[in-house]
Image 1: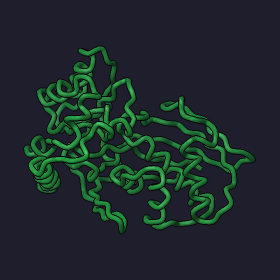
Image 2 (image 1 turned 45 degrees about the horizontal axis):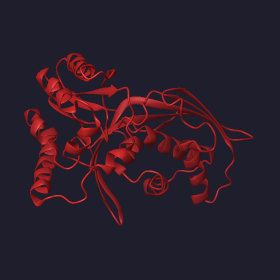
Image 3 (image 1 turned 90 degrees about the vertical axis):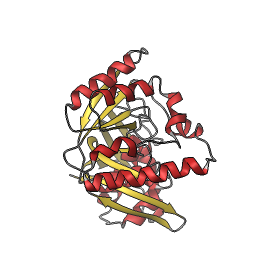
Length: 294
């Protein structure tokens, strides 16, 4: 079987841990029963484990344990387009792909809460997992009772330009620099702008997006881990971007564009080049279908 799982971008500046969007950049997983566990990797992430420590295998075994199934060994070939540790949901693709493989191999149809029960053992943040499972743009809120979310239409005329630098940044490191206590002023600042972001999309007031992605909770601190981040942002806006923000935990930087996305991407690359960092840009659209067994 082949499983296709989309990348994602999240946060959109002000919507820290609340907004996620599936993108048409994919990891493909070819899975079949075997006499022992094995993993082959092509494309991105060839440094990842190829034994039972591989995240895909670990999640598959966790699903077997959770739902009382014998963990029949599998052979997995990963053909990865999603760069690892760049803020594009690479880990979420493995988690979601493994759960979809478990469902298919055991001919089960799990509910979304059942899927999330397994997924949350490896990734606590639904802003990556939900768009990867479902596709599209997702607004979510977590509580002790579970996750509440809405899947909203994302404007088709907007392209997502992602500039991917050639260095990794772990989510753990990116979270470690964030303050655990914030001022009321900063909390209100983000609340206002995250609400404005959703309103801007729904009303197609794209002129408001630049203000709507302003953030005081995570980007000012994570910017220290991404050399020339503010210049990357400046160049993107100067070349026509509607909104610019760290993709997920970074270090990739994403822009929302309507006109000349290639120009925006080129200038973002130039900003990283100024501090000796090689990068590439990708012009992406929304994936509306989520993870699929093909």
